[in-house]
Structures are given as structure tokens and as C-alpha cells.
Image 1 (cartoon, one colour):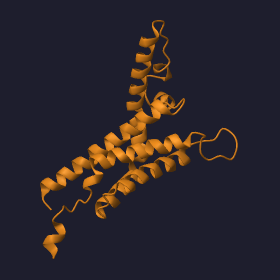
Image 2 (tube, helix red, strand yellow):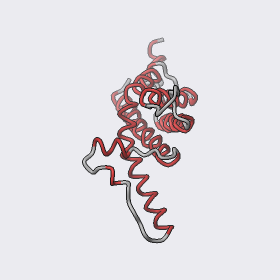
Image 3 (cartoon, helix red, strand yellow):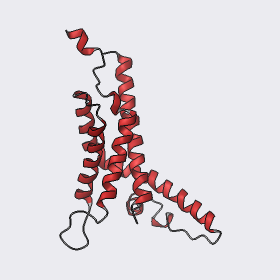
Image 4 (cartoon, helix red, strand yellow):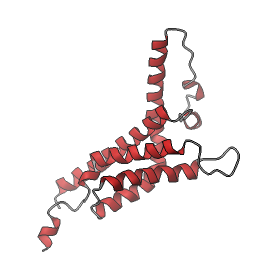
Length: 171
């Protein structure tokens, strides 16, 4: 295994994980009703919760543009929260895929969905009732699937840190 191959794999893994987290966070920000990481941002950043509460008195097209820009900003900021929470379980799945050379599309998409549901089950606090998942849990599952798919596109297809010719040298 050459140093260049190892550096390339590590770069692909880090870049793939970062883009997968951003893709999942942007999906959640745009498609899950009332899900923006405003509460998280207002608790951990100094700007407060007024960042997303804006009032615009202009054309509807400009208001839609401002809303889209605000959602992209919140999605990018939320990616840090999503990435932090998913770091350990995703790291374990990445190590498994690299060690076992799991390059399957199905593995990476199901791992992303499983991580998403596990994090949702751990962090969701029901308002009332015995439900452990919110009513729109399937959208969170889809966000995990999207994250797993993006990771597979960038780094998962080439999983196997040992390199393609490692077994041939041992024979």
C-alpha cells in the first residue's frame, strides 16, 4: 500500500463524510416541516434565534429567495450539528466498509438510514404519548439515505484502504 493511495483514501473519506453531512442537513432543512436547527444554533452560537426570524415587506419572489438563502445558511450551520452527532456511528461504519472492502451501494445507503434513525430515536423527546419517533420519521430516514448515497458516490465505491493489488502481493 503506497502512501499516495493511503492519503487519497483518507482525503476521499473526509471529503465524502463532509459532503454527506451537508447533503443530509440541507435535505432536512428543506423538506422536514419546521425543522431548522435554530434552537441548536441559538443555544451554541452568540447570534440568537432572531437570525431566522426576519420580516420582509416586498415581492413574493424576493421573499422566496430570502427564505431559500436563509434555509441554505441554516442547513449549512446545521450540518455541523448533524456531523457532530453522527461522527462516531458513521466512523464505525466507515471503518467497517474500509476494512471489509464493502463497496455496495446498499450497505452505504442503509448505514446512512440506520444512523439517521438511531440518532433520531436517541435525541427526539416526545411531547406526549409513548411514541419514540416523530410523525415524520420517514423524512429523517430519507435524509440518512441521501447522506449514505452521497458518501457512496464520493468514497464508498472505492472502499478498501489496503488497495486493489494488496492481495496479489501476498499470494
